[in-house]
Image 1 (tube, helix red, strand yellow):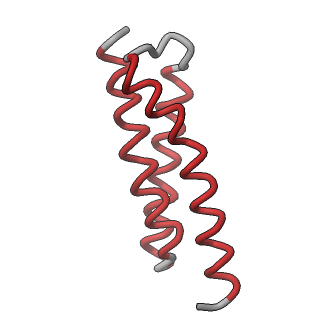
Image 2 (cartoon, helix red, strand yellow):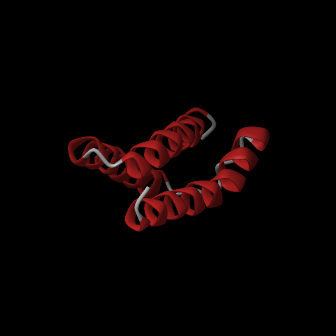
Image 3 (cartoon, helix red, strand yellow):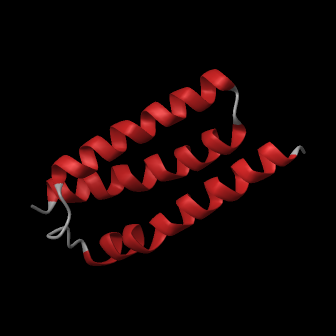
Length: 84
């Protein structure tokens, strides 16, 4: 593995893991009061675009990180809509 790919995996790990506390807290409490629907909609769309970019550029760190982040952000987005 070259240093560029290693840095990509480290960056992907850090940004994805930083998202987990918010996701788990939201899933546990179903409380989305402090979360903006507009922000999460744009964030989720942006994450989907990063996944597409990762797939098009064959960048595994981007692909793996964004699959996980999309799954978690979609759960929060559904909770935001469902438990308004």
